[in-house]
Structure formats: C-alpha cells, structure tokens
Image (cartoon, rainbow, N blue to C red):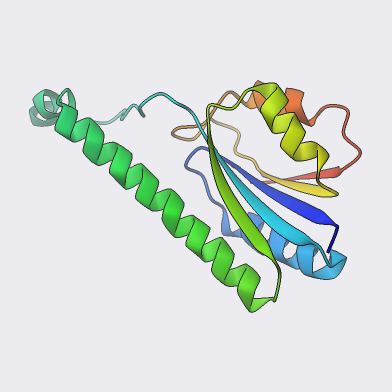
Length: 148
C-alpha cells in the first residue's frame, strides 16, 4: 500500500463520522490510515466550576489528574480507530503531536493522498490554533475533506 489517508484530530474533539469516513475512504482507495492527534501544549481551561472547586483547581494534583484524563481520552480514541481499521483490514498508525509547528504538520500532510480533518467551528479543549492547520494544508496535492 503506497496510498495514505490522514485523519487529523485537533484537540479533544473526535466525531465518529470522521473516523467512519477515514476507514471507508482508506478501504475504497486501498490506502493505509494515519490518525494524527494534535493537541496544544497548554493546560486546558475549565470554563464551568463550582465555587468550592476553585481552591482545588490550582493544585498540581488537579492539573496532573486533568492531564491523565485527557491522555486517557486520546488513548481510547486511538484504540477505537485501530479497532475499526483492523476490522476493515486496513493498515493503521497513530501518533500524538503536541504543539506542532506549521512545517512539521505540512511534512506529514505532504505524504498523504487524502486528508480528513475533524472540524469544529469553535475550538475544542486542547486544540491548537486552526489557522496553523489551514496554513499547513496550503499547497498540497492531496484532497482535503472536513468533517465536523
């Protein structure tokens, strides 16, 4: 298999439609699938807190717990992508990129024949700036499909 489909997730937003479409496309195009999980380097901000939670949120233990939970969510989605791809008999690879630069993303994207971007109008938790992704997608020959 020399064809490559990239499934790009930005932050903690994982629509099942994007996973299904990536597996479907990879199967039809006889391509391997690379699921790329992009996360920002800053800790997430919880917008809704109860007053009695405020003291706890500043503690290192709370931040470590939040990071562990975030990593657990990503790992679970990685397992789902791998399971769906293996069921469809598609070669699959996964990777997490933390705060990647435009050039690093562009280098990944250049290898692809088809790119499926998990798209959400508002930035999900741990997302990088969507302009960085748009800039990395410029000038590619690959078809780009956005699924929200």
